[in-house]
Length: 392
Ligand SMILES: Cc1cc2nc3c(=O)[nH]c(=O)nc-3n(C[C@H](O)[C@H](O)[C@H](O)COP(=O)(O)OP(=O)(O)OC[C@H]3O[C@@H](n4cnc5c(N)ncnc54)[C@H](O)[C@@H]3O)c2cc1C
Image (cartoon, rainbow, N blue to C red):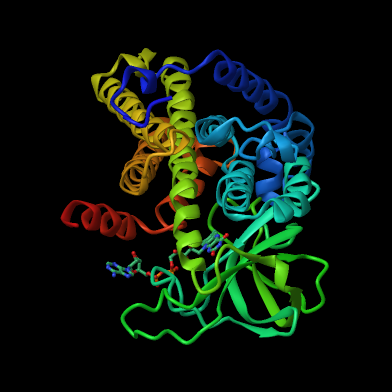
């Protein structure tokens, strides 16, 4: 495989293996996700049935090398999984996206073989669901302003601090935690002196705090995760001491491709529903699809979706080819997340009053779309990443 993203080898066709995966996920979504999605949203409860079935199908193992129990299918495969599930249930999709793209791929890339052997098989089987713990009360867009600390004590580190807004906090078995291990020598470069640790849920001193009540993705539990005199073996340090912020940012490059895929899938789901409804719903004696105002909405939706898919898959292919993809991942996330909101808004409009009712899927997708512009870096943060890459 070449690292040149413009090479024909990186052209937008899927491989046979990826097409098979896409079909498998479509069947899974039809049989095990769609029948339950609205119910989990209403109850604000973790999608237990879709998660259990995802484990059986190996959807939790996609970014993990075969030697450690994974299928090593890569970033594009993980993107396909998230896109397909997001058409129907963005909550289930983000659960898998954080697990595969933010956590498992980071552990696979930045660990020693001894660490891989300890952590990856349980992530691959889904026995452990992964959570990524970077955000704090004062560390949002400025993630380098970390207040959590990890202090070396003999052969252990002792972690103290409160992480906020943690996806899957209630159900995670493994937390990827960022904490300050040294005072920053340079006040302008607070990203120095942060390290990355694996913390198992069973560790003494780990507690789950408040669960957020949210506008959307209500079946994805978001919680505080608190570390109080939490002692972990020194072997749980991932990568080099004081250089964990690079791991956090590298993981976010992959994570953003996941959220771009979520936005893309939400847009596709909204389009599918709108096309069907526009053909069925009759006003003035004819289907509303015959009105040009509706046709133009559908045309704009379809055009944006194709563009988002091209951007998302370009970034995923670059990552799989080992090429730097920070700018391209940010472009994909920026475009696909803003598109998701635009398309969801238009989908509600195409549905009229029905689109405002919980009986119709677009109402939930409209609420779920909003988060794609906020987490894993806001829309403004994506523009900052892109501009920085352009200006050098
Ligand atoms: C449902 C949900 C799940 C999440 N899951 C996780 C998770 O699993 N792990 C995790 O670590 N975090 C998670 N987060 C946290 C999320 O990544 C942050 O909330 C996000 O990065 C934004 O940070 P903030 O909310 O503090 O916003 P702030 O940083 O306070 O930003 C507020 C506003 O100011 C803008 N802004 C800030 N700085 C600038 C600037 N320099 N230039 C221009 N505009 C700027 C922002 O774009 C935004 O519009 C989650 C959040 C939510 C809501």
